Length: 253
Image: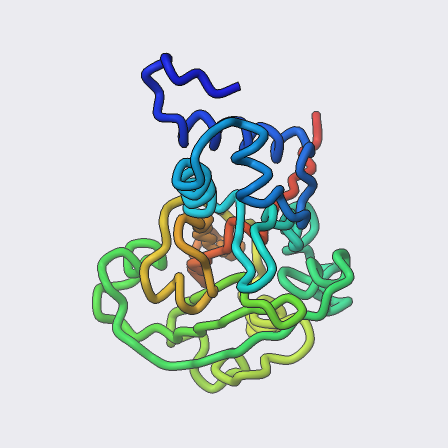
């Protein structure tokens, strides 16, 4: 299956074949791929060619190396982000909104580390929250884990004039989280807007999420809009693309 006269480097041809086997489940998620020796024998290429192909697929996030064990197909994502009901009042009343709701549906154990501070709004945040640049915002930085594995970074910013003296400025915001506390304070939520993108992580994000080289991240910016049309929160999320699936159910009406 390797055409040495094609002009395409042999390692890239081999990587294409192996990638195809992963996509068609010829190599199942989590399974070990054949050894270097077996791949050399099967494809009639050199060991350096095999190693280059494997390194390319590792950088793409298709394969991963386990020291002393071998090369494995990266497991399928373990976290589904359920978009339909994650922000509903009914879910908040059951304390199963957002990340906790994903955990309940997926059967994994959630944990969150929280850091809270106050900072002046930069131009972007000021525009999103309809504030003057430099106005105080309460910042909630979170690192979310699924079964102990870091899967998401989230940074919420809210106008300090709304959060001052409330549980929103505490690590534990209570059942229903920040959105429940906002509504208790008279800011009934009308709708949410989300923008989803993808990119390569920063070095800090790669370290925090324990990403291997080549793994991208999904970025989601959500703005919570209260009845009356004024924004009360902007939440910037960074999700490990190797661990997440975004699940949408869209009505047809």
